[in-house]
Image (cartoon, rainbow, N blue to C red; front, side, top):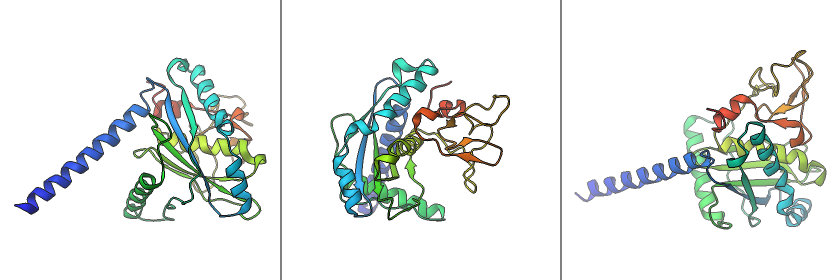
Length: 255
């Protein structure tokens, strides 16, 4: 009898957690109110350079993401109810668990649970109403010339973002942060995972352009600006990026 009650209670808890996650995910793309996004900076390589950069951060560094979302919403006549507000949370001293490399489905599930638990234990709520949490990991560019792929979980509304700790890269950092932020809203990657080249047509900013190349902008989930069929460049800032039609549908901007 006791065992049956315990199993029933656990099933109830799982159902409640699932319902809460579903509601949070649904509300995040309802666009009825300003979407609150907490950014938590982390010195990911324990270097003095990263530490100094993280300590000097202000929320103004991330304002371009707010402006980008408003500008793209206005382009689709959604500006009245598609705003976001970024808030700078406290600097965290713990590093969130990294996703498995070429792991199985079970490995990914275990990692996602670990990330949720880590977030619950380490990320304080920074003001009321926070819906999405982005953990931004900073690395000294003199120690790390190339960073691992960033990741995000839509169901958990969590992002784990790897960027460089230098003011010269802050505009490109915001492109990466915006990409992962949109993942939390349900946007999918639109580039080839083997070549990193944007996929035509959904990964192109203007697939209807004639001549097609070179593209002048990058589609945010395509990640790069297509210069030729097989070559592309990384956008320098969010001023060189747009939200394409498929991404707009995925985040509930287009019916």
